[in-house]
Every structure is written in C-alpha cells, then in structure tokens.
Amino acid sequence: MTDVAVVGVGMIPFGKHPQKTLVDMGSEAAYLAIKDAGLSPRQMEIGFFANAFAGRVFGDFTIGQNVFWKIGINRIPVVNVENACTSGSSAFFLAYNAVAAGQVEIAIAVGAEKMRVPEMGLLNSGQNEVDTQLGLVAPASFAMRAMRYIYEYDAKPEQLAQVSVKNRRHSSLNNLSGFRDLVSIEDVLAAPMIVDPLTRLMCCPNADGAAAVVLVSPAIARRLGRSVGVNTALLFSGSYENPQDQICWETDYRACRTAYERAGIGPEDLDVVECHDAFTICEILHYEAMGLCPIGEGAQFAADGETEIGGRIPVNTSGGLIGRGHPPGATGIAQVCEIVTQLRQEAGQRQVNGAKTGLAHCMGGDKEGDTKSCTIAIFSV
Image (cartoon, rainbow, N blue to C red; front, side, top):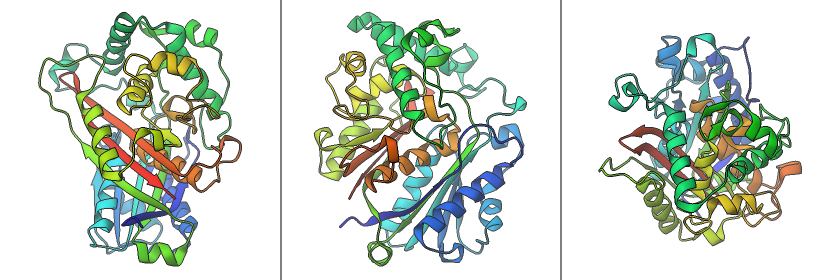
C-alpha cells in the first residue's frame, strides 16, 4: 500500500465568476473536497493554499488563512504557495510530503485563481526577467518551440490543431470545464494568429477557478475507503545551463524518468494522463518526455487519435488547460482531481474504461530556455 492516499476532491466550474472573490472560490472547493472525503473541516491538520497572481492583481497576501477560516479551519499550519503554473501541484507536493513523512495524518491542498479581471493585463514570466524585457512572453516562447519542432520533424499545423480539437471534445463532456464548444481543425487554423504558428485556439484561455484535494495516511484511508493511492509526487526545477534545446526540456525528461523510477512503473503502465497543455505544442512535447511515443512523433501521435478517449493512452480527458481553462493556482490540483475521478470510475461520459493508473504532469515558468518548475504525480488503485 502507498504511504499517502487521496480521499477527497472538490472543484468549482472553471470560467467566469465575477460575483465570487478568490476566498469564496477557494473555500467552496475546500468544502467540497472535505465533504467528498467524509471528513469535517476541524479534522484537517495542515493546509496548503496555492495562488499565482493575487499579489500582483489585488495586492492580497497570506490568502490561505482566509480561505480555510471561511469554512472553520484555524489553529493549524497554513502554507501559501506560488510557483507559476505549478502552484497547485506544488501545494499538492508539499501536502503529500507532510503525510508521507508522518508529520500529519490528514492534509488539504487548495488552489484558486481569478484571471477574468481587467486588472490582469498581459501575462509574462516576470517583469524583471531579462528574457521578458526582451519580449519573450509565454506565447512567443512556445511559438518558437513550435516552429523549431515543425522544422526538425516536418510537423504540420493541422497536427498541432488536432490537440485543440481533441481537448475541446473532451471538455464538452466535463460539466466543470469552462470552454465546452466543439471546434474543428479548420476552426483552429482560422482563429486569430497570436504568434505564428499558434492561433488563439491553440492557446489556453484564462479562467477563474478553484480545486482542492484531501490527502491522508494509510490508516485513515482504510477507515474511509474509496481512496486512490499516491505512488509518488515530485517537484523539479530547471538546469538553466545553456545551450538549451528548443524542442526538449531537460527538466521535463528528468522529472518523468525519475517519477517512473520512484513509482516502479513505465509509460506503458499508464491508463490516463493529465498534462500541461498551455499551448498545443506543450502537450506534444510532453508526450515525448513522458515516453508515450518516440521523440519526433508526438504530432503524428496526436493526429492519429492515440490520445483520444478510446485511444491508446487518453490525455487530458478533463479538456486540459485548453478546454477546461487555466487558472494557474488551481490547474495542478484540478489535474489531480481528474485523475482521481478517473481511477474511481466516476468520470461519466469521459470515463477511461478500467483506468487503474494515472499521471498528472504540470510545468511552470520560463528561465533561460528551461522551465522553472515541473511536477509529476502518479496514482493507482
């Protein structure tokens, strides 16, 4: 049996929540996760709250204490976490380690973000970063990777577009997803160009949202039942050693390899995957880093339908960032919620038949051609 199990998940629908504050959203997701676990707020022993942009947009800090107190949780350690797009999965990593180390028997990780606000402006990798000052905002960075991949492997824009088509199809089956309209390859290619070759429909949309998970020790899991084991949860940062390969994040490959070693499995053992698809090229490159297909074949892998529900290895059955929407503080935890839902066989129309092992993958931040953070968690029943 694993040292840690997930016994509760909770999410609010991603999209627009103009009448809800960040604290409203986070506390609602936390309450849903605790209720799903069959526990009470007073039983939580440590809490981790993830958010990436509230400090910049609203001037708010130490938000986690407010989120937890709104549902009656106080007098426990509370840690506020910021790690770009992996903020949520980094909070999950910390909660996992607190339980695995025996410091507590019950931990909760919550992520929330408000992105659909006029004050947000253009997202970048940090106003003080030299790369950002030179114009390397996120869409430009990933467009460069896409162009290099097309050049190296003769990939086609239609193959990149298929990732959006697939993820929006999966999203249409998820009532918690913010963007549920189906799109065609023609729609994706005809959408406004953001940075060549990435059109608007090849980029993830911003969203408001919140998600939460409750993690427990084996003893608590046995008592509660309906648990999903966490085989491993890992967090990595980049090497930043130039020159960097524009179509291969060394950190991505290192993280995936280490996670498989820790979990004692290989990519062939996976039944379902949630991965970071901030742009369509991201998902394709992550296929290859995760070993789902050979290097250079990711675009064709997507075009062949191998990552569809019903395909060889379904990826982003939730709709991913492209279909579900991307509130960075919540995204990594939302990925965990989807994997747990799949392994419980509770995903409804998007259920992967017989899913027993799943992987959640997220990346965040650019620095010198590498990523600032990469998280991997593997789950099984």
